[in-house]
Length: 363
Length: 259
Image (cartoon, rainbow over all chains, first blue to last red; front, side, top):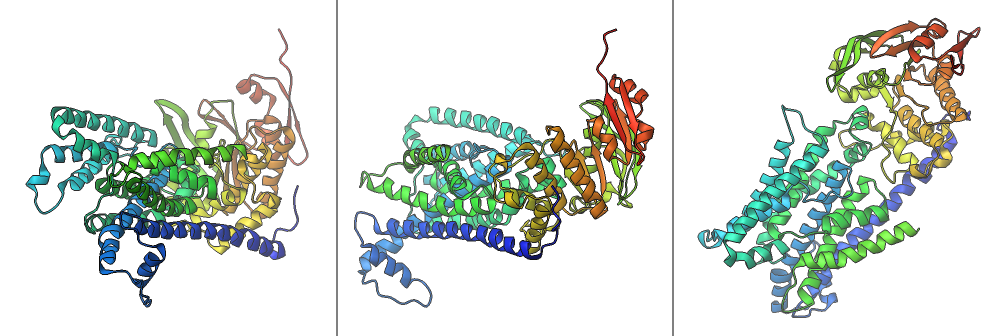
């Protein structure tokens, strides 16, 4: 079975050409598709609404904002205000929330090597729910005049839950196993949900507000929410993109990853930190939008392969466009009323996911 | 590069699985550790890999392993585990490329050189045609070769193999062991391995160690270690041994007779 040609030589060069660049070409194609999907979702999102604005005008208006490009979209000042003050902030918020939920979902699945992990695994949803409920029930909105305290309360609740899960699964300075961490997360989530349900029960007059928050929505008043979310989005996205290589090594399990020179525990802690920060910030401004963090990374994995070098960036991109488009549906189907976006993500996401799953198993 | 254990013990769940192990392996030799099931062989391999807590000292090269950072240790010593974890959906090239990890930066992003070395090893192991195949679709023997390829891609002076031939049929067992033997000569590797199959162990080792109940029972050349008495005492079977001119030992096991 031995081959005598051990050198790189001619064969090596040939194969370097066919594997090396062939792979990156395929990856590049998916990356272009992801970027295109984000641009298309943004244009559709801005064009759609009670006042219809032709798509070509939206394209020109967006192009005009690019440096060095000067085109006239011939939009009226009123339409321009609709585009930039009403719709664009909401579309951008949708893109950011979608990217963060899908990206952190991909990271959670990578760290736990479990396809069922989602960004809410360690109690983010329950913690944010408790924080928001307390803020709503205590009528902090009336007490704090200059800002909406609900996102901050939800953000703190989410981080508290993750920190509690992390601390409780650690003992005597050593980090516990991933399984311990998940169990601690489940316990913390149940505990927080119990408190939240109790508070909700005692204050039934705010039930509808709490419920509306939990179902998730993307509503904006100008660029405020985007500005709130942006710094966490930057930290999360940069952090995740820097750790894709380590996540690929971690895919062989902690023990083997150690023998490949990786420090699994440090990587796990770092990735969970940035992913949780991103997911908590997303949840804080949008409520609990389910399904994105689970479905998008899976769809990406089935279509483009399982390396995190692809799964993470593509989840960020396709998560962004998926949520922005889901929001278009949420605000048009029963206009002027809005459907909770969480309902839409599940309603579109589940059949779409089943379709890919079916295609995958059949081929 | 030499390896040495000095009074190394491992306690797992309150049970001593390795008890004061002392042995040194000269650079370039092949140590095969044998012993009945549960003797502590895998734990011994894991002490080298740095994946189990132990007392006592281990030297890798001239340094105390405890002071070698994980990444540097992974540049000196590659491990082929008994039950490798295969990431779902990974193909042969990407899997073998993981072996370059300790030579990469903190982002673990492979260079052109990493890719070239991976290709060389895959060709050397006649896996060139498998490059784009999904690991799930390979036979046991092919997959084992790919795992060995990853360890070779790691380009370390020491190779640690924990039962590299378990689940392989006789032909594939010999194939993998012969491959390692050739590579060892080719690259002057130090090989430390466990092998449960006594019939082949004595033909590949140049040093052997017998482990039972966590203790080092005997060590030396195959001819010194693989005796009918030793096999009878620790495996409870009757065996016949043949020592060849080159010092390799062939073991034939006889069926137990009803008394």
